[in-house]
Image 1 (tube, rainbow, N blue to C red):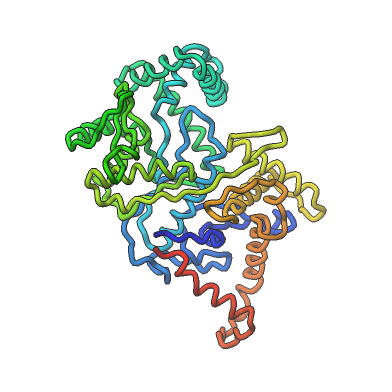
Image 2: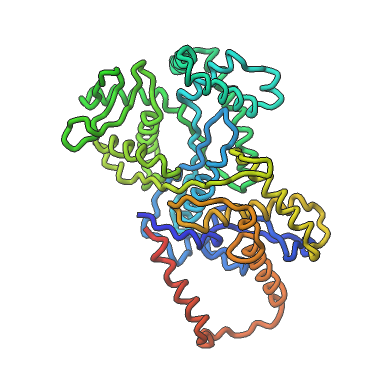
Length: 446
């Protein structure tokens, strides 16, 4: 079982300080996320995974699936936690010696795309799609989704569009491919701003055909049951009375998110024989992943025990000065804007070559560190003033501390090398710190 100690996160990110001329009350450095050793701090004590003193005994391949935005929609702020928590776990596991594959499993298939396709046919605009693609697609989706609540014809049109998509209709597939490319292009910009990278981009669409093979296998094993409504389900109840079940196919024969997740897990195991597969999503998907893992076990896949869902709580109150917001890009822009204002108001901020760029680096770092402060499973209220405070347990103060350490290092790195005597560390504060560091292994090893 993975034990996470989120407050120690800063040592799993790599910091680069900027030239001395760029200061905002302190020397600023860029925050980028890379697979670094557990000792990569401002004092250059980097230890490669092979030499890490806290290596896990289990160093097999580990796949971390995170972020997973839905195509045709702007990057939702709700995906921020999945992206950065998953990145933390990947960095942590890499430092412990695992071969880590960072995977982004896109939501690029499903009935929501049927709704979008049906909506675009009615009131989509090619001109708006070219000028502001994802903004227009989002508006179309909101409009058609609202209409579908009271108009049965809209629902039927969405079902037909998705049925044609699964059947491989050329024009429908061409529209889907176009929207997918537009979406990924915007996501790439967001990931670049966050300093996050992926080894592999995949998606539900990859497994839409494999999911039907999976359904035939369920039927062959006698595990696929039909309900009165015509849907296909797998009985997960201990007594075989369908009191607990997982729906795996709609009445019209089209696949579901759960079906494609199961097919994806089987495919990854066959291809990569992973040691562990970690899914990082919000806690609202807990039941979904329980059903995925239980269905795999019922089918005889004992390696389902190697699959793990790491849930997290929801961020509440993320909004800009203009009001409520759901897009991550707006949140990142707001962090930059507020940090720039704080810098301008400070009397000790030096003249910077690119104040906006510096403000973005500090603001985004503050967002990320704020997200790591609370318990993983707890929801928390977002507060801009608290996030951007220059004192206390904040990302801004963490950068100040790092910059001070860099300054100390530069001051003494060319001076005489004094002989280090560990016996000198007798004061209570030093002993407490060393004892705390010795607890590290117990927190992070599986």
